[in-house]
Image (cartoon, rainbow, N blue to C red):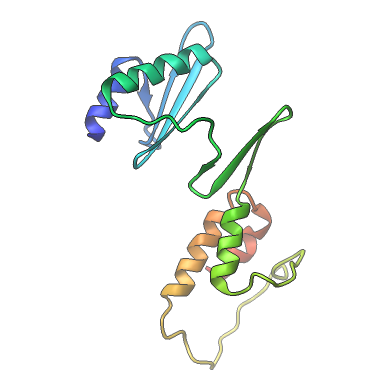
Length: 159
């Protein structure tokens, strides 16, 4: 199915990114640009020409069984909000899920989660019996740095 989908997009002028195979883009001489991002069975379409977007949707609807869900609001832990000032992307819900799952939902925030140039020291305390939970948390926090660059240093030290 993925091969058929890629071929279908290539047939109407889209190019698949060599750096991210889930990204397809198309531009034309009139300045229209359309991008399509695929994740499993979700597709995000964006561009600067509503006509081109509508043509792409019609093409996809004719070739595949698709469901139109309307404007993008939430995708892979990212919340997307539009206003007259532009587009805002945040991970509020994703952050709250991490805090809840970690059991620290009611704690107070800190302006700096770790002191700069912090050096980890060896400990004689017991090593984690099951490091899987810790690794999963670090992975989730690394993903959170997409919108929260201020925690990048601390997450890097912890990872």
